[in-house]
Length: 325
Ligand SMILES: [Zn+2]
Image (tube, rainbow, N blue to C red; front, top):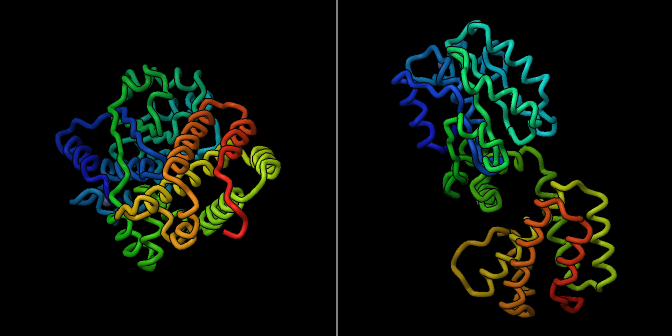
């Protein structure tokens, strides 16, 4: 477990003083480490070693490999959490732990629970059986039923400092210094994202394509921009459209930093040379305007507006540069 020392200290103290929270809600941005912390807490609670978690006792090893009979983890992000699953879970939770001290259930991304599933779980959160700990995770607690949130101890996780991400990537994932620096900048404190990017190069490849498309769009005519908006809104799901908007937003923020000769490190380090070539052709006003427009487009996307229209409006407002820049 890397980072999140305050959260871990709190959970350790609660275990030592036998005041273990039976309903916990871990909140924070995607890939910041919510599910990893939930697993770690399951280890802290069931570890048989002296320093918990020892990572070597049978319980710790079974939890790492996903084979502990008292630990249930539901972390399939794409699958809706239905009432049937909650009912089945409730039957299990009514039984005493088989091997460990606590039965721990982790329901990741609880936003994906249906209203009836969330309501069914409420009963268990109100009166959890003894030796049961239920851990929910969510990006934004305001999207959950307030009655769920109020029954949980809420534990917010914040992005890790960039230097911690750089160090972790080099120490535990054998990243080169250059790779670690770039990924840490792009990850913005979400170690899980950086690790995924190391293991799966399609993430960086997709980002490269999006950055390339943006630069092409800057010199494209209205009609071509419309075609691109239509294609992107048809070919990809909502998450991918958000990913594109976020990626472009990082570029415009970088452009603002470079334009104002700010000493802060830009996010897209590997594109710095290319970005510097277009800086002279942009004004601060144009850059700030695009940042604002992309932020609006992102919040529109959250509210499920028509994606094609949203993208069209945004892309048509891109500054027009001459070809060959
Ligand atoms: Zn252990």
